Image (cartoon, rainbow, N blue to C red):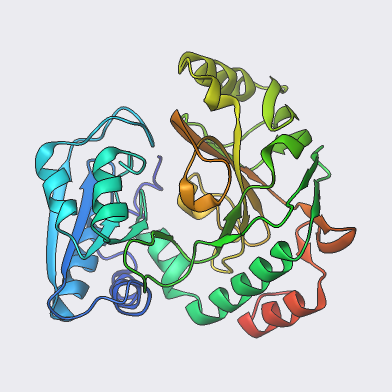
Length: 357
């Protein structure tokens, strides 16, 4: 990703905010306890200032930080296994913070470390100073989680979900009692992976997903980042039928999917909501972009077990951002043009101090 030369890469840039955010992240979100082994893996595309701050915060909590540094892999969310020393380190972790720009989530060592050995895992791929400050240091984590719990309840109590946008989205699906994963909760349970605060994820019954989805915010992978032109995707029974758009991004995305030579890469894997008030616009950092306040994010490709859907493997996984969506649950508006209109959601947004509520 491109950095703002002369601003983000200075060592002193937001140094105090970074230190406070790192302690808040490890103590209040990852719930690190004295004596625990905490593994951080990062690669050559990750901001080392964040790695250092997180390791120092971990040590200050009387836990043992273990840092593993590797070259940046060529794939993203793929099946390829990492170097053996990294696999061994995460297998012994009580807490695992994945920072690598090319994460090993969905690999066999991930399954061993998390699903079998019970590591408390967070995907913080590409975390840099700005992301740490925006997603953690600036916000009231407990209030963000409270908002997410309300969204989870509202979604689980609904059947039909219609997503629209002025950019052209009109996607209809049915939940039929499926659970919603509030992924942005604290890492309190062994073997339960979490994500950064401000996201719920789920998948309606795959065969009921029909219509058009428009990505107009960001997309990654492939390495597109912030979109200059819309990418329009037609779905039929949960599978991509057509990808089109005015710019080169749609063609690039279509060719990337086809190049993986895996029919499961054309399946819609999950819906997600983004609602972290520290993020107001896309930056090209996908973990941050997925949490733009009021956005929706959609995953395509492999579907993890914890999404609660049909579950399948695929060659990779990609996430795209829809800005300013309208969401209707059994005909009731939850959000319109990026503004939450549900009364309870509005109250919680006001308590978070979100502008306009």
